[in-house]
Amino acid sequence: MIFEGAVHKYGRDVDTDVIIPARYLNTSDPAELAEHCMEDIDAEFVTSVQPGDIIVAHENFGCGSSREHAPVAIKASGISVVVAASFARIFYRNAINTGLPIVVCPEAAREAQAGDRLRVDLAAGAVENLTQGKKYGAEAFPPFMQELIDRGGLLEYVKSQLAEGSRS
Amino acid sequence: MGSTLTEKILARAAGRDEVHAGDIIEAQVDLALANDITAPLAIAEFEKAGFTKVFDPAHIALVPDHFTPNKDIKAAGQSKKMREFARKHEIVNYFEIGRVGIEHVLLPDTGMVAPGDVVVGADSHTCTYGAVAAFSTGMGSTDFAAAMAWGRVWLRVPESIKFVYSGRPQPWVTGKDLILHTIGLIGVDGALYQSMEFTGEAIEALSMDERFTMCNMAIEAGGKNGIVGFDEKTMQYLQARPEGSRARTAGKVFASDADAEYARVLEIDASAVPLTVSKPHLPSNAAAAADLADVTIDQVVIGSCTNGRLEDLRQAAAILRGKKVHPNVRAIVLPGTQQVCLDAAADGTMQALIEAGCAFSTPTCGPCLGGHMGVLAEGERAVATTNRNFVGRMGHPGSEVYLASPYVAAASALAGHIATPEEVGAGQGRSR
Image 1 (cartoon, rainbow over the protein chains, first blue to last red):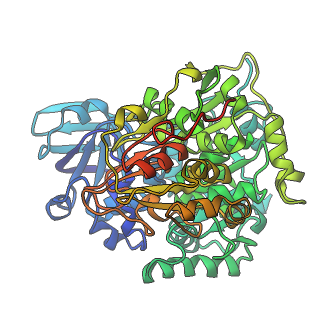
Image 2: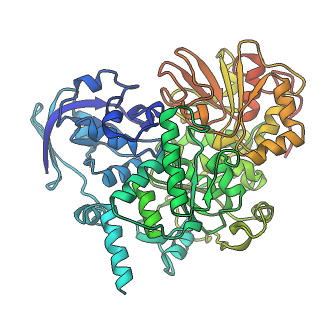
Image 3: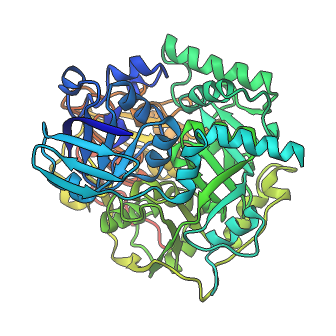
């Protein structure tokens, strides 16, 4: 999959409380969550984000609470992919599980500026900053995670495991 | 090569002789849990995927503790979804209002966790149960849905960091100060994807309540789990759980080998750790409480899954007894469970807190995550015994949270600014 969009740039340690504040967690409706995405760190985000845009952040993106509402809100807001120097552990799993594409690429994350056009080729593991004319290699998913993704996600994987178990 | 405590637990759960850091395993789950925020999303995924039954209702816990007693109509709807799912699948460990407590205080206290267990929870503070020498870690709702259906979970075996705390803490210095200080040293991603193993003389001297507090905050350093080795105190705690409970009847005790491999060993002199406060807006922003006397406050919150146990409330009461909360301060106490309430009532703790001018709540996560029961307005500042001080965590994005121990929180409630027990004339403190 190839994504191309404008960069929304953030620093390090963007926590899930600012991605989607807990005061909105009395619902799990993606559209409703998207209305408040990034609200406490970037009040303009919701009005400025265009379908396909890309969030770029420094280290430890998605730290804090385990709320899966965070990747759900980002995805429903129209963001196509998140590029970061590193991701917090639970957010990483949640992004894979909810189908929000994520890419670990410290160099691209450091150099990208708000508003830059970025092109991300997930399969090739390539990030290109079209505005700055720079290309970067991204970290590949560990093989097991790639297999999970290829098999349609965690719950599809579990279904096949359970089916295998009941046959044997 | 030897194994760490965490590696040994994961090897057992994966049915292997040994596993080591970096291995991907499928581990058997002894307990899977979720709350009223994370369960509804999990239930939706579970049903959407077409699962019709849970792997074993006895090994699942559903705990409505975040926005309960229902704070608004939408929250009531979320709770209702969870309650109906629990009834449909005969999940006996669904805890109704009036019996419920904050999940990470309630579940170990009711004996649902044994040493050597693998616990996964759709709540980041699930790492709390490492205090009973179990492997426990937080996950999202889809992972919880998968664990409910499958009874297994995929995990990458984490590298471990060994923290060795030498010496004895100063008077009034608690496990909360040790963990805030530690996060200050290594940063909010200092243990990213790793296990935090807490060892040393000072850890051996900690109470179980303090060990729960330390393991609870492993996630605030990015840790996958926090863990403390099994000892006499662990055994006494487990033996005091309800008869027939898992804590009394199951479990397996493991210990790290002398030649286990650690990613890092960090030695910390516990006798040099000050009363510690984490300033806004990261738990790693640690400072000495004594240096923050010019920070005036509007609210104090004592409780949560971090510090809502009986000992925490007793510590607060030791400072507040016979005195009055500062006129400009709202002090709110959130006990961890109904049993904590009863115990606090029986030994005079509750009375001392109420007479001092504290509001005493039913168990709930409440204001810790800005839900209800003490949300902050713009420009307001709180000292809280909770675990996070992110932007907007306790309410308005223009409010501030300072994290501290119950002693410091209680002293600050009296002073109207960040204060130490000495400053409010609390005497000598305890010796260890």
